[in-house]
Length: 258
Ligand SMILES: Nc1ncnc2c1ncn2[C@@H]1O[C@H](COP(=O)(O)OP(=O)(O)O)[C@@H](O)[C@H]1O
Ligand SMILES: [Mg+2]
Image (cartoon, rainbow, N blue to C red; front, side, top):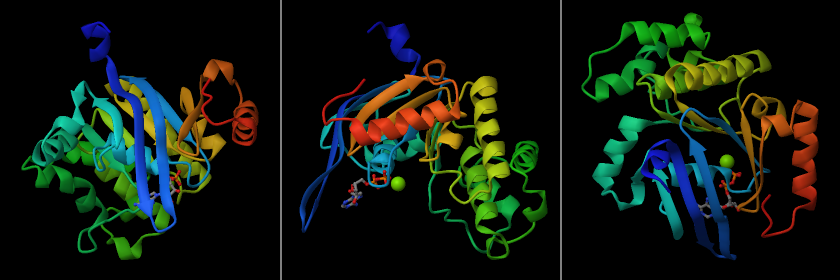
């Protein structure tokens, strides 16, 4: 691949495999996954529960190491980095949105959002914090502590915290899981804007076709394998996306990726 082309990739994996060993035997949570995301892309990963979506995100964030295969993120071979190098890389480039919100109970909504800047030794950026609070619809809870917020509000504060430093790559695991549909739509709009305005790349895990439809491209995982990937133009409506998704989950055979 030409160097310029590589530079335009946010993520490139080759034959990525991750196994877990348990009493019952070995589970291949991610199996032979090769994928590419260009910078500025908004891509949704869909799959049933247990299909390996979270494990894939953890691999891409460098939170767990693959058993086989390679991962390049923003051009770097992340698993060649030392633990410290990886921590630094993650802080600099990646915004992680997980299913567990892990907010600091003693800080307000606004302070939780601002925290990564302060921890990074940077000056706060009230303008950016305010803009995120507004775009995420968190005005009501900016001064409130997490124990006085709903689950959806806590999730949105955690999203604000992940986005506050303007990460070039956003990895989001079921980010709308606790949100009502209006806030879910608002978040997807925000992701689309971040891709268009700041050239951020978003990889969002969801099993909801309505949410996934806001992305430009869809990847479908089944039993750890990538069984389908297609662009929005091949799938012009939510109904069509849902039909293709259900069809792939029911009919795809191991080892076949279209
Ligand atoms: N830490 C772990 N130890 C053992 N098995 C795991 C671990 N994490 C995930 N798995 C297994 O790997 C498979 C994929 O899990 P996961 O990536 O969480 O799927 P998803 O996010 O799509 O629901 C499941 O069978 C799950 O039980
Ligand atoms: Mg998961």
